[in-house]
Length: 202
Image 1 (tube, one colour):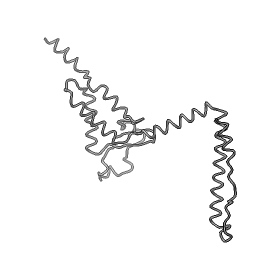
Image 2: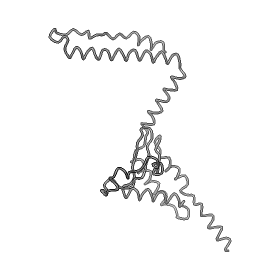
Image 3: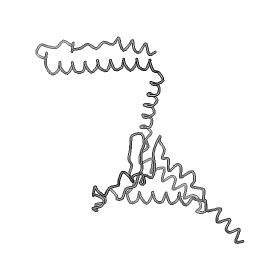
């Protein structure tokens, strides 16, 4: 298959310089120079394509690795979740958690959800997209806040402590910290302690 690709690419001939017959008044002008430029670009792309096909044939394992890596990055970019996905999941999880009794709910998960909801009410939640992954983090002030501290560049969040502000990580269409919290939202670790204490009293 690689041999057929190389033969086809090699058989393509890009004539250089510009071979379209132009009127004498246009020869040596911008149109001819523009045509020569794009013919040269086509020739360069043809040579690069032939070289890539040859290297793929010589090293198939390396080529497969790079193709898989590129495909994975493209898939991660396509499935990179946005802030609307985060808001929808947070609302759904808060509603699901509200359906349970306080004796069953995990207090740490409840506090986390309340903290995120409070940050959204005050406009502190931000999304940072890195292409293949997204970070949801909490700022000090709302975007509409006009106090000096919110506008001064020297009082902005520092890079060294930025990881402390991250509240969720979005990758491959999921917000992973929210997903992890919801695995334990209906498990109250203090429930059995309270029941044991009542038994001892009785």
